[in-house]
Image 1 (cartoon, rainbow, N blue to C red):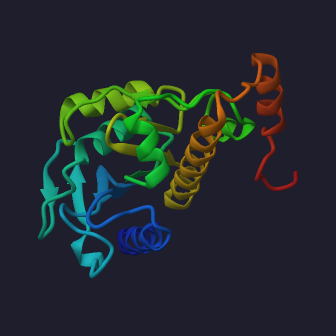
Image 2: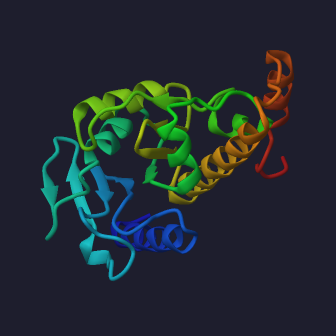
Image 3: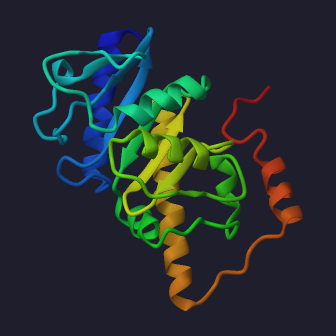
Length: 213
């Protein structure tokens, strides 16, 4: 996808997250890998009024190009791309259920087999660090090890994917699982799948969403 198309995709998914109630005001940010760096939404912008020209290009060195400053969270976007070459897009939101769970600083354990879509039998909550810092980036990278998403303590969540559509699907899955887990916790501690049961579910996902051979 060329740069202009990626800029348009970033605007479209920013608007979609806002329409679905995943973003509030100017909270949250999206990026897509491009060339020797990445394109990212600007600092202090929400969905309203965002245009393709507002998107900022950031080199892996951190040098930004555009008329606005990049999102204050550009560091963990950059570091995820540097450490995880399989990812082409990253989404960060303060969606309600995921953020509520992050404020409890709780991992999501294997209470539901759909966790397998996010890479493993848990969704980890990264240790707390101030937003926009290198410490937050390092904590997020640790929580996302062998995962496609994580919670950020007292903050929100991150989801990554092959492209923006994939990262968006993972974002939706994180929010859905967070809401289900919170609802279950109202009644009590959910019954967890055993390692064998979860491994069996993971094997079932091998061909999930892929074309017929």
